[in-house]
Length: 183
Image (cartoon, rainbow, N blue to C red; front, side, top):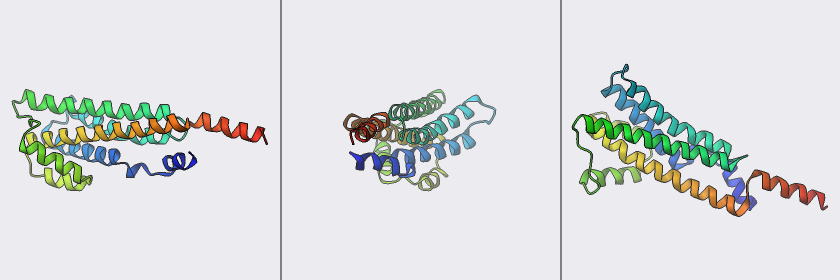
């Protein structure tokens, strides 16, 4: 019990795959918006802020896990919802411009899904995207958003399992008080 709680409290959020993937999504979104959207377009700011929110809520949620698993889980879910909003912005961008969205069975989708599974380095993807079209970058980012959301879901599942087994901060403090009282 104590070892598992210590693992959560002492781990570094930078090591979380969902955080690493969210950094890639943020950086690609920033690149996409600065290349293809006018800064005065409301969507420019909305997309960057949604990508930022996805990343930052993972950081904040992770920090909250030390004292409130419930609040930590809520913030991870806010991160997932922000990424969902961002995915909708990319889908809208493609749709209103008559650009193609990759089919789940397409070779492009398979290739990008594999690259996303193999790499979490933002520089790798920003270099890959630097010479690509808006259509390609939007689709690339949609794949990475889906992967980030999946990773967030898996992490929330692990935190929830840990909570079910060990309880949260309040329950652990109660155990310590009762132990000291019974001495």
